[in-house]
Amino acid sequence: MAQGIKAPTTEDLMSMWNASGLKQKIIFTLAMIAVWRFGVLMPLYGINNEVFKTIANGNNIVGFLDLFSGGALSDVSVLALGIGPFITSSIIVQLVSVVIPSLEKLQKEEGEAGRRKLSQYTRIFTVVLAIFQSFIFMLYLHHLPNTIISTVSPIAFYVSSIITLTAGAVLVMWLSELITENGIGNGGSLIIFCGILTNIPRIVDNTSKLIVNGSKQLELLILLSIFFAAMVFIVIMQEAVRKVIIVNPKRQIGNKVYGGMNSFIPFKLNPGGVMPIIFAIAILLFPSTILALVGQANFKSAAVKNVVMSLNHYLSPDGIWYYILYVGLIIALTFFYASIMPNMQPKDIADNLKKYGSSIPGIKPGRPTAEALDKILSKTTFIGAIGLGIIALVPSFASYATKIETLQGIGATSLIIMVGVALDLINQVKTHLLARNYESFLKDM
Image (cartoon, rainbow, N blue to C red; front, side, top):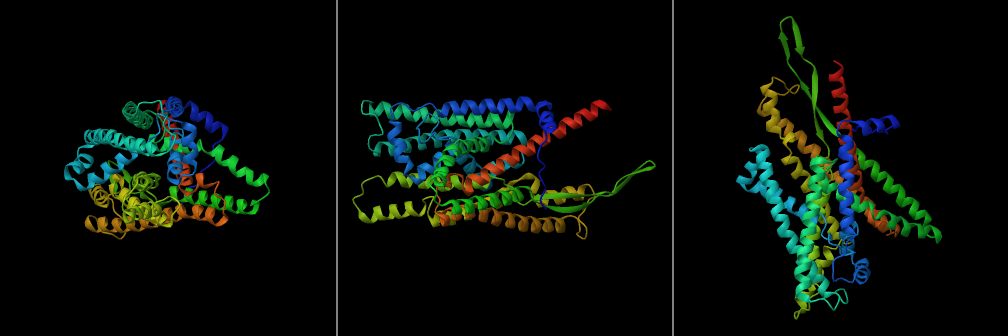
């Protein structure tokens, strides 16, 4: 069942602004984003930016990465690595936590202290990944003609650039964590969201030239209609829940009877939100970036070179194999997120229901309840994962069919991220407004 989203009125906006603590959170979030945007505009010393930007415009992988960095990669700024190392590190730590018992114990049994330790491991691994990725990026630039200024010392350039890019990645990680803790929304997702938004004026300008030239107007109208329909389905996917009815027991205290009213457990159709999309991109682009660099080398063996070029072609963001792997990863990561979310564990839910005397109509408490909830969760997550995978493909194939590539920058991936992050922000604002109303109710009592 999908929940409708009511457009906020002027009174709602004023109430939001005056809500307890919300004003400060919004101002803090905007300030952190401004700091990030200032860092994006600071170029890395020793790079001929205009030459690299020209080369980057013809490279699918660099262009795709640049979309999520807000232009920092094509400008070769000090924040060129962006949020990528932190996102990749988070993926690896979460996946490893399922395999290694000691890390799983930290995540599930040791509460806040365990989560802090895992966060510390994530930060340390982020630094390691940032050093590695900055070194790879410098090697990539070294193989490109005229990108490095000839008067710069090679050793000094490599050392200073790796230190600067690593520090930039750590700064972006720190800003994202500050936004998550003290601002509104998930910091990492919000930075990616803002990075996509900064590219929209350029995309709109390129698309408007099609209308000015009087060509492909019908195709553009069809493509925009498909994009709008995709946005509607994304909203439905993000907000849809499967409600499992719960019967609560009646309790008599003195002469009064309490409880006895039915409630429900909401299982989201897409429990991971935008994170399966973001993580799938990070997993796919990491080998693609490495292969793109290796492809620049001069191989003596033609067979080895052909293998590298073939793998690079298959993992390119505009290849069919890329989309097959992309959808497969989205489905797998959606199930992974459903399996690690604390509020979606069938056994724990069944134990809590039995403890408080509640039950699902027609199902015995305990193990039968856990098995029934597991089946419901599996079906719900499967529908959500398949739906998310289909939505991820439709706008991209629509762009290919209409031969309009100027809107590729706000294709399926960007569209899902933007809508998902926007919905998450709206839900968090609603939570703050409800908290304010609750506080006002208590004061009036």
